[in-house]
Length: 161
Ligand SMILES: [Cu+2]
Image (cartoon, rainbow, N blue to C red; front, side, top):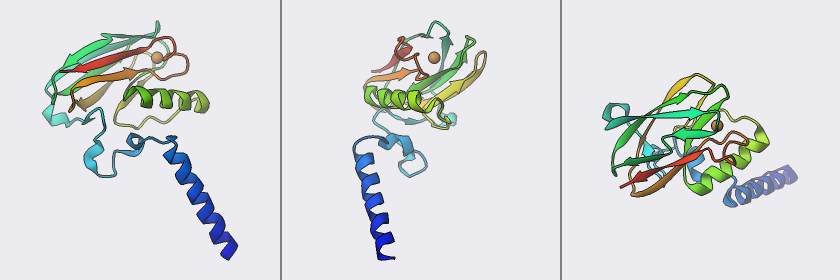
């Protein structure tokens, strides 16, 4: 019994180290744990308080159109995202580091169930919605993190004024 407990503590400690090393960024689980999903790049938008809608198209040449989007600080944007291609694509908002981290994870895992509030993943020909409030000035990168797509330059940025 004592040994089992020790093993459990050791495993827990190890897990803590892994998390601290950045395998699981805070935003990954930011929603549903209080704080309203607030991240360094904004927070999930309230569908009832949308400032305006912006159409974003994703295509098989691994491009977002538009790739640069300007918003004002505090605005809640409803992104009407359309996958105009045949392949699967996604639009994920995050910091540069978080996107890269998640991209590496995607390459290993093939597929992640995308229930995250900062992402919309769409099969070819499908449309979806991503509602986000940009609370801080600066540049918020977004990207498609499907294997190969990010490397091919499927990325863009939201410039928050
Ligand atoms: Cu893509």
